[in-house]
Length: 147
Figure 1: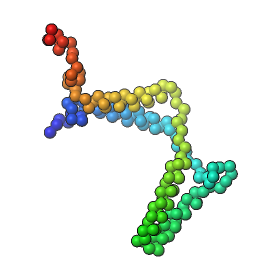
Figure 2 (figure 1 turned 135 degrees about the vertical axis):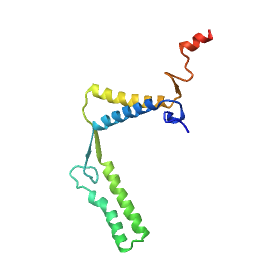
Figure 3 (figure 1 turned 90 degrees about the vertical axis):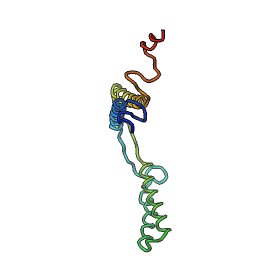
Figure 4 (figure 1 turned 30 degrees about the horizontal axis):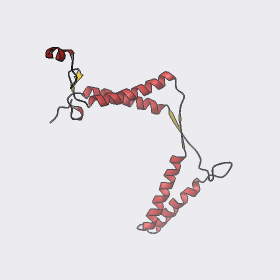
């Protein structure tokens, strides 16, 4: 059984891995905190004073549910109700408007540096690690011993 400090099957790196996860988590949290999401109304044909069409998208769902109340084993009822639910969910997702709120350059650079640094630190933690240097790296002591 491997030691708990062996992240990803390599020696050492648990501290680096946890630090990377923390950096990545904070960076993603701060990034998502800057995003606002708005919903809009469904329009049939684009806009320009035309009526909303959300009710029209509910028709397949309502017909499917009605068929299921009549016969709960009806395959057609389940398919129509499932398709209607899928249309409603897709319509909600399609009509979302996502905006990045104003942020200072410092805040944006800090967020991106935390995300990139977290990913780099996690990647470093899964490499073999001994002492203060990665395996295969030759320090000054190794070069002096060969000479």
